[in-house]
Amino acid sequence: MGPFLGPLGIPCQTPPPWGYVAGVDLRTGKIAYKHRNGTIRDMSPVPLPLKVGVPGIGGPMITAGGVVFLGAAVDDYLRAYDLTSGKQLWEARLPAGGQSTPPMTYTVGDQQFVLMVAGGHGSVGTKPGDYVIAYTLPKS
Image 1 (spheres, rainbow, N blue to C red):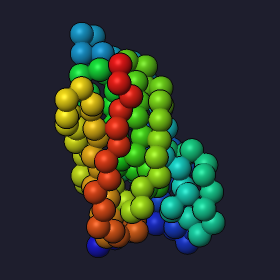
Image 2: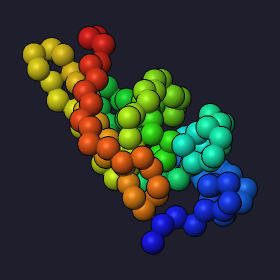
Image 3: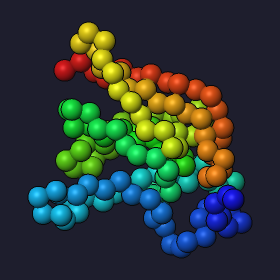
Image 4: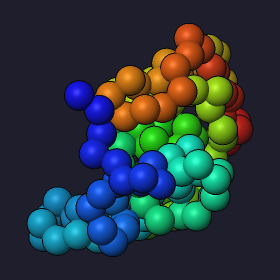
């Protein structure tokens, strides 16, 4: 079974947004921020980078420094967000979908790395692949 998409390749549920990155204040239980996550670039016949908020499958990885990495959106990007504000700090294009695979991190000496597996996901129609990509974080 595939996703429920209309003729343009976008979700039948209208209107967008279809996906968010959100943060909750655990002391109050209230939503601290909620921003659209992802573009329809890889969902529609015309690659439009409109940031409407797209579906995602997979979870984030949060570093000790308060940076959240998320590669679950169906637009094949890995993004970094500030944990407290939700502000997008960085993004990188993936060669295939990063769905269902949360990023991971490790350190060697004083250098921190973020790894992302980009294998695509047949159920959401993202480009399949067989990649493991490593990024280095700036030394603080």
